[in-house]
Image (cartoon, rainbow, N blue to C red; front, side, top):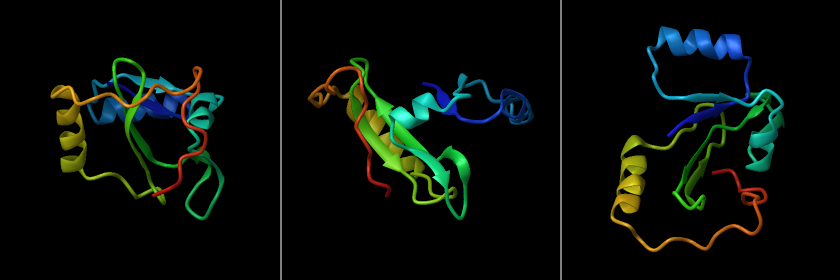
Length: 111
């Protein structure tokens, strides 16, 4: 499990330390990963040049098993929902079909 952010490394590192986070954080400086997953937010009332808040659960076969795209910067999935989705993976539910090529879904609709 890891987090991908499209922010400056110094700012992320300071936040990671202040919150005592041990989760690996990937810095997507050019926002290429964020753009591939269709959550890049160029301009909006609550954001500029960042990602919409999004949560993806990707299985070991690199298939997206769950995604939640926030409507605004405060919109996050409920913790119990995420735990339930992770539990489904633990129970080895049938896998979704693999994405075509190496690309993630085109442009997921915001929630």
